[in-house]
Image (cartoon, rainbow, N blue to C red; front, side, top):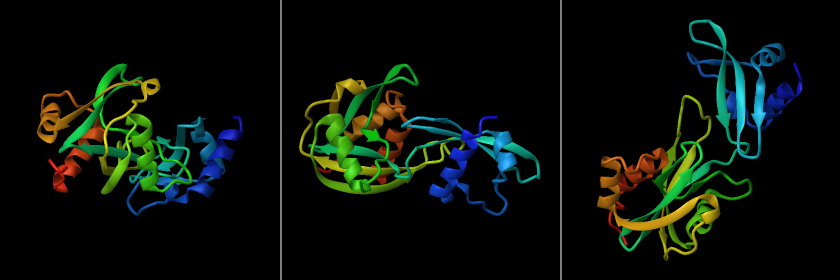
Length: 212
């Protein structure tokens, strides 16, 4: 087997050791080079995604392999709920993975060298052409604990309006709706995006519903 997947794996272990910690009673990551080579190591890499196949030992003692998807940089992604005129801004975004349109809120990958707040403001500016007046942290979410090893930070952002949409990214419309309508879109299935469900829930729990 080509040794590059194993070398990439070793570099990743050095750069992001938190991804390889072992907890008592959990699934143990094995780092012996022979075990890593047999499992695969870093089996895919591009500017947006790493796919890792770890050698592991399960709690019952069985050896095996487990696949994880990771962001190439340690910075967490962000999900931003824009608040405008007492309502929330939703964007209609075409997603290649599902081959369909989705009502969502702006979100993006982490950006090395930017703080979480700077990254959130960047995404709002890029996707809906808005300027953030105030940013409210709403915690974090792990989007798929069975596959994805990274987290995203949730924010609400009071914005000054909606400007130019990122049409080149597949965004074709933006709507400002009352919070109650956004929740109705969740209830009837018009909103199915997990990140959007999470940030709407956190915003309601934080008491931000209907704030100007």
